[in-house]
Amino acid sequence: MKKYINADVVLPEELLKEVQKYIHGGMLYVPKPEGLRTKWGENSGGRKYLMVRNNEIRQQYSIGLNIEQLAEQFCLSCDSIKKIVYGKK
Image (tube, rainbow, N blue to C red; front, side):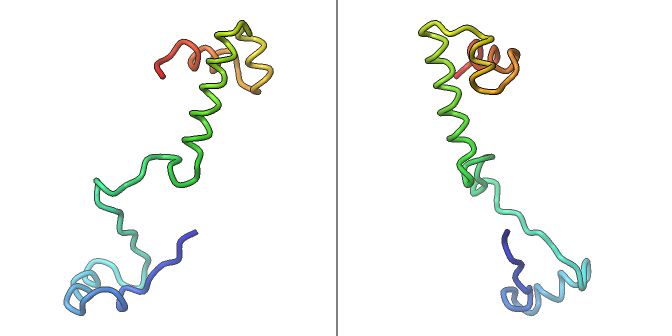
């Protein structure tokens, strides 16, 4: 979890006074600019894990395992396996 930074440490005095007109004594989240945001799972590795898992499911399906076997093996529903196997990569 990220720690907060005290605004009076990082903001110029004039900007701090302007912000205090809208919120004072509270916590304020300042999001990253659009171009700098990371996609879901990129920092934690979740996105890569799912990509590898889904590729393995497709590979196992291509060598003959059926939907039910894959659902059992990967602890997913048959509908989830179908979405992975029949969906876009």
